[in-house]
Image (cartoon, rainbow, N blue to C red; front, side):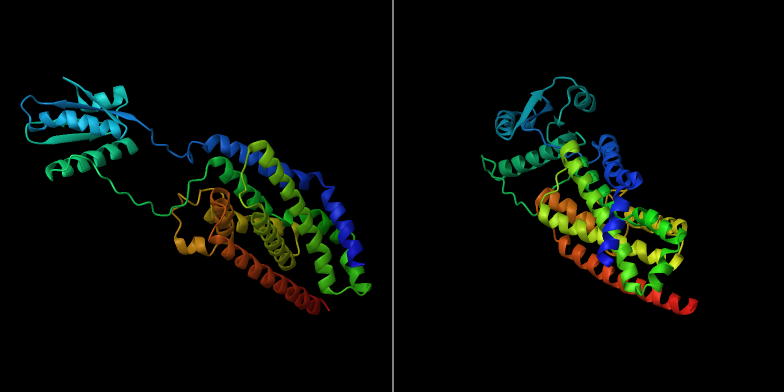
Length: 351
């Protein structure tokens, strides 16, 4: 009987136009708007292969004889020096899009840098060049180390992923039609008279809600891949994280419903909780730029899920996969147990 109820309830939920919009079209639409609005925010700055720098040298300066060597070695590093006779350094940088401007006086030099990576590169080059010249070395030998870092994610992948997660956490909204129907027609009382226990009643609500949200979520993800170009990285692992995310969200919503016993109150409370978790976890303020304390983010399941999925997208792996799976698994087990305990206690009170 429980299998028959689950099948019928799943059909009921999937026939709802509101559910189809909420979990398929809404995430894609919101992602598309935010991708368009904030694409420049998460755009990675690319250092140009070559850039120009200006310089002026005072007649009789100590540096005058070093200029040919400086310009030759700079050219090898992708820096083209252009001589100016009379120019204001800051105006020249702005007008001619220079990476910097060097003023060589008689005994020292002053560097004016552009406020970007070119200015930093120019500063580094000059430091290495003059350090080597003063030590009698005629060729720059730069040794660089490349420590591990997380590559930047663009707005398309970031928002396309996190809003699939965020809308999935509003899973209880999907069940509202089913729960309202049961309450309106007193179906729960009929189940109890027929001998169905709390566990079976819980499962005939929980399982179809979870499956309906997951199916719609996956359709929305597929649309985001083909329509928006969102990259999900390691698909099998990403699917498992999304699976557990929706399962936990459904368990959370059901727990709140069993406490409140009201659809309206349940949706309001769930929205408040999910909005707060989403804000901390990067659904509204990107977690890369978030000023939230680290201990708050580490306590947030949505943060672990978002971090794992976005890192899988750019790297194909993430240290947060295990924490996301463990966090959601433990939460689901605790919420299911708490919900069944709540149902049992309320049954005894009503009896």
